[in-house]
Length: 325
Image (cartoon, rainbow, N blue to C red; front, side, top):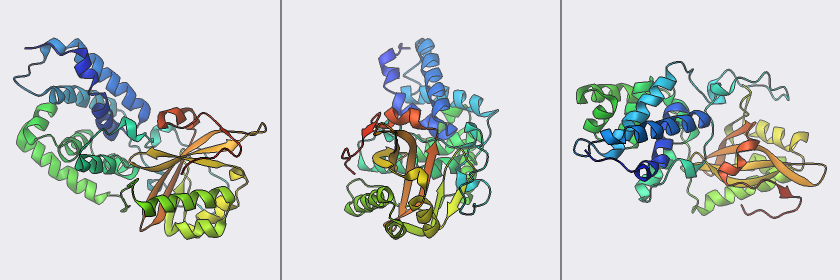
């Protein structure tokens, strides 16, 4: 056996983060799981035998055990779209649900690192918020099987080694996981391509309409069947006109600015609100889904101002400061 260098383990941090996040749906829990995985792997690195398995396979087995242990007492996380009924157009958001009720946003930079175009596309699609929420319907080990086989493309034999089971058991679990995922698969949305001129133009038009409180402009870029939500509140609003009116007439959006970022393989924004000193400060992260060149889903994650740096967003903006979109 050959002892693994700690640097070799650290090189697996990004793929481990993507794996653990898909299983757990929580940014904080993912950080804890990845750190615990690397600590355990470093402590046991003299036990790794390269003749029996790839280093990635060996480390993912540790990560799977860590995540499954964490999931034993966890409740299923969801998107607001999965909870309760749509609200009337009302400023009353209701009582917030606990943080563990929701799938949390993550920056692309922490989840994917593929260089091959196919890897990049698969990576973006498999960290979409709606996809991660759909995964939460699966039992923990089914979740692991599906991600290992269909997302990370481990072989059936490697997956069996990771889970400590047999190839037939893996294949059986994968069939059940795929069937369950199909039953909870999210509504389709276009895969985000930052080089797509039409998508870039749509996002620019949305920002312009949002910042100018242009209800007609917002209505033009939001689909009629769109949904908006604001976790941790179990409130959601359906319909393009209703969403446009809510944004365009809200006093809470007065003077607000949007700065683009990448959230879960999709476009997003950091929303800033102005203070009395003319400085705009972080308010919330906003995730955007698109379909057929219009916006189909808006998720405003309240209480995320402390996470702006993770998404490459500035700590503040000066009033009138130009922002590239």
